Structures are given as structure tokens and as C-alpha cells.
Image (cartoon, rainbow, N blue to C red; front, side, top):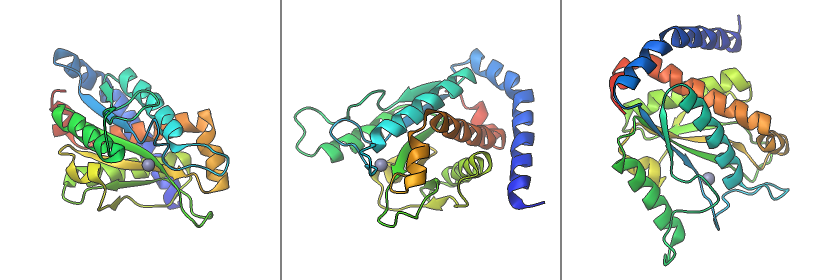
Length: 232
Ligand SMILES: [Zn+2]
């Protein structure tokens, strides 16, 4: 059996395991506050992020994916907060450095919360148009973030069959370096690749991407019972 088939079988098995224990987990959460997951759709407002050849902006696609992911998570009993829920950035009106103030505020929002996990969702762009595929990045100093990233990467690869990339540590990203919570940066694909651009624009694909990320989160939590037990 090839690795992909094995991965899919593993995913299905883990989902069955989760679904049989989901009631218990969710029931436990209801006794306390539901566990909080913070979603951070990248960019917004005057900062469109990466732009595809047809003018498609990263800020719109990642917001759609996060809104789909929010629905999956809420239906599974999680509480969800978003750093932004519309087309705006987080810098104050008087800001002289919007990008810096925006990312600092996102980081403060996540750190000030008692979230179980956070996910920052972005899309990529590269000069070589052949480059494609979703990839998850993490802070190498946070072991939990590495495990979460690997689970999400495996779920995206297994469910969407669109990438053989591996989760990787990353430097130089303010939010990833300064967030004090378990979390990761999910780059959902390359707007510079024409085929992937068409997929990323498609509402069904956006929803499937959200479902794959959701599955990765469940796989991570299923394997990290101490995280499940933490009240939200
Ligand atoms: Zn971005």
C-alpha cells in the first residue's frame, strides 16, 4: 500500500476514534467553558497580501477559509475567536506603520486570550509559477506547535491530495515568534501557480481546505489528551 493510501486510512481511523469520543470531550467542555481556538486570517483592509495574476487577493481567500473553519470548530463544540472577521486590518487609524501595528495587535489578542490553540492562515506567492502546495510552519521552540503543524500538514496532504510538503520550522515571522500559545502558520497554497489559484478561488475547495485543517486539529487533540482537558 502506498503512503498516501495509508495516510487516508489512518485519517479515517482517527476520525472514527474522535467521533466515538467526541461526545465525551464536548460534554466535558460544556461543564466548563468550551475550549477556545483563535483564528487569524492574514492581512486585510489596505493590505491585500499576495495577489494572483487575475487580481485575487490573499486577504479574501484566507478569510473565507477561516470562516468555514470557524463553523466546523463551533459545530464540534469549540469556542472560536477571530483576529478579524471582515476586510480590515488591526492597526489604529493614526498608525504610521500599519503592518507593524497590525501584526503586533494580532499577537497581543492571541496572547491575552486563554486560547488552547491559534492558527494564522495565509496564502503564498513565488516567482517560479510551478511552485505549489500547502505548507504548515511553526516555532521550533514550541514542541506542541511542531506536533500540531505535522498533524495539520498530514491532514491537508491526505484529504486534499495536493501536496507532499512537510511541516517546517520558520524564523522571522513576528506572530509565530512572539505568540506564547501553541499554534502555527498555515500557508494554504500558492496564488502564483495558475492551477492552485483556481482551486483557492473555489468556494468548495476553500471549504475542503477548512475541513482538512479542522481534521488536523482533531488529530492533534486526540493525541494530546492533556490539551483536551484544559478549560477554554
Ligand atoms: Zn500572507
